[in-house]
Amino acid sequence: MSEYKGRLTYAKGTYMEFVVAPNQDVDFGDILVVEGKNDDRFYIRAYDFKIKSRWSGMNGVSYLMSKLDENGQVANQEELDFYLGGNHTVKIGIAEQLCYSDAQGQLYNPKTCPDFFCEVRGLATDDTALLNEMKGDLEIGYLKSGRAVLKLPVGIFGSKAITEHIGIFGTTGSGKSNLVKVLSSSIIDSENYGLLIFDVHNEYYRDLSLHPRVNERLVVYNTNPEAARPNVRKLALNYNEVEPEDITACATFSEPQLDAIYKLSSVWQDRWMDYVLKYDAEDIIEEIAGCTGQKFQSRTISKIKSICWNLEQELNISEEANNPAEITAVSQMLKDLEQGKVVLIELKNISPVGEQALSTLLSKKMLLHYANKSETERSFAKPVLIVLEEAHRFLGKKEQSTQNVFARLVSEARKFNIGLCVVDQQPRLLADKVLSQLNTLFILGLASKSDRGKLEAMCRKDILQQRNEIKNLDCGELIVATNYMRFAAPVKVHKFDEYLARI
Ligand SMILES: Nc1ncnc2c1ncn2[C@@H]1O[C@H](COP(=O)(O)OP(=O)(O)O)[C@@H](O)[C@H]1O
Ligand SMILES: [Mg+2]
Image 1 (cartoon, protein in one colour):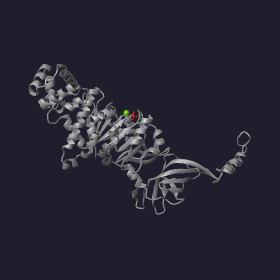
Image 2 (tube, rainbow, N blue to C red):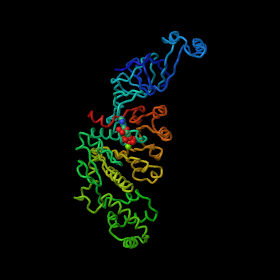
Image 3 (cartoon, rainbow, N blue to C red):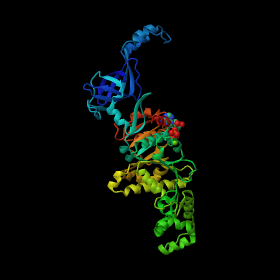
Image 4 (cartoon, rainbow, N blue to C red):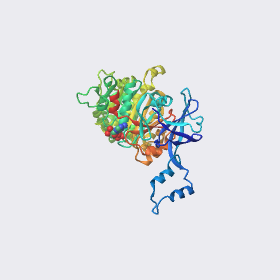
């Protein structure tokens, strides 16, 4: 199956040149194999070309020019073909060695270079050392090599990638949502990981519910589920599940307002929200003044009451929202996640305030749930990936500095077996501290140069050489760079429905 592409003509360190065989195409970004002497193989990536000819010198060029007519046009094509034909003119591919496999099929970083005139060929299915590393256990697409898409699957190893955090970046329409769907589908098949998706546009249910194993593996929550959608549950919360941080995360509060929220919760503990809604502002002020000696203005308390009221309505918060009270929607959700299910939280019909409060609340519960586990308990719980769309709203430079729950997830979650998957169209808006913690990047087409520049600067793998490739990515194409893979690989992501048809 592998195609002969040419022969090696020069190597120095990891830099290589090879002559492209006549009638063969090699493109920018092609991944090729140089056959070594002792069944070892050198994997290389072509990134540039040059043309060399015995006519390249000044004399040669002048001689050829003399074959043109006075207008510089070809006078006798046949004669010119004679001069240019044969091996007088060659195309030289310039490549970089990516990695090396020995005769036993063990993969290493570049160790040595191949010999002069070794054969260069295309990748084939028997290049198993490289392909197994790229395949992972969560497939996302096929390897792209130049303009061709090879039928060689590429993916990530969930066990390595999830807890090291993931970034999915691309302009609108570049294929981010499709990638999340394909990744979800691979997670459903694998059963080894939990996935919590905050679905801002309610766009995942329709497609994911086509998966053959949806009934056992997918759970959907909606605060206001319309009838007749299987696997969709009603999301409701108990007052005592809401903490001050969930409220402070969702709106801007003045210093006195923040102070009041914390005072209320310290006085009334987990009944604070219940009481804030139940009692009049004047009674609340009196009670707090009695307990803490601090007298808040009624404007301050009214604002808190108003936000709590909105959230109560929107998120179905009540005293006994869940019946029986011990199996709440949240605790059921955490159980599903740790068993390796995909949980969708549909947020489209919730206001930005409600959405912020709910995402904060659930992510925090997830973090606490895993953090409170003993080592043994944790070994039975599956790693969980939390997908956060338009993540700069939570992890921008300003937000990150407040150490909200998402910032804590980025810095602490890996030790508890949780990872964050940050999806955004403008990676430059994310805090550097966040970007630097994302060890797997899926870089889709990005229109803005400053976004591409930001990722080049923050990516752990050197992707500078792929700058042109990244600039020219079409819809559904990406470069995946992950810390355990030896190089950043170009991928054509499966289209979700086609991928599903294969399962
Ligand atoms: N890998 C792919 N192959 C083919 N078409 C794709 C692929 N990824 C996305 N598309 C198409 O491109 C369009 C936009 O994709 P989408 O995933 O919604 O982009 P984004 O979420 O980045 O805005 C959709 O119509 C989708 O079907
Ligand atoms: Mg999208």
